[in-house]
Image (cartoon, rainbow, N blue to C red; front, side):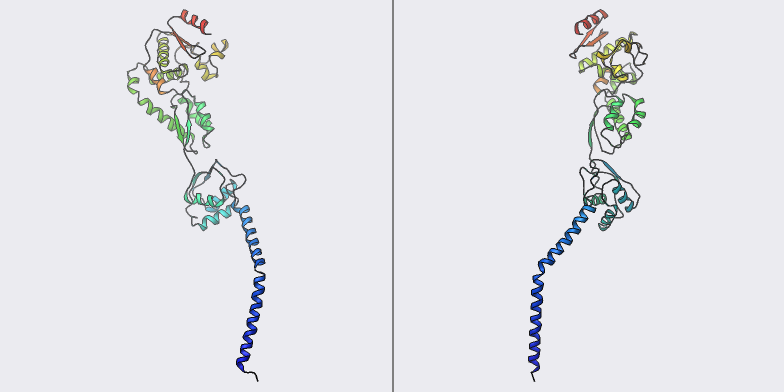
Length: 342
């Protein structure tokens, strides 16, 4: 009979041989399994990217996206999916929850300069990365409220031009022309307060000159708005203001063309006799005195010119086609200048 040790040794040898054959077969199929695994994982990853991760085709780049306050995360996901910010609101909810921010999502307006994947969107609303940067907006001297409304409404998404005009037109002339910096979500109320406050701050710098003038602030602002459009430099502004005050003091009509720009949008070289005889209260040929309101937003220089004009005996002036202003003391001189320069 074969000894037990020999039987055990032979059994171990058979086991080793079996393991060697199994190991060889495993190694032979390793590349196939690896390839299959990579294919499965890759397919899942690609599907997840196209279905959930990548930005939607209609991503609202450079447009405000609002995340309301006081609503559950699931509703935020639905809103952002409907706004084409993410492809799946549910996926966004799960991701924000996994990041531990399901209870502290930051509400407010967001602006993304370029399409963002779902991971970046989740991070943005989790930490409050709003992406809002001040925008530089210039309001030129002499701009009317309708010009101001057009400038801001074409730049600020939350700005309502109609609401602005309803409140701003009665305050024509009291919005200071300047360069402003507003966040993209600024509203018409924000703009109005800033421009009016800017006017008050600038007018305070010439308060002594206004106080020493014989004119009211309202008359000075209205005169300044006319001077702003009539003059091209500081010296002309003060001279023209003096001429126009002279005419008013003598009971003469102002007879300035720039008020027609405010009402019908026509300049000196476009006016007709019908325009000059119209019944508009801004027709300074037909009506004596200042027009009912300012005709635009005057600069500080024009306000100062209206408050402290250059004294002279001039009663007439005109600007030629090159922008040079010519002054006269008599009507005969004015007629001669018209013949000479036009």
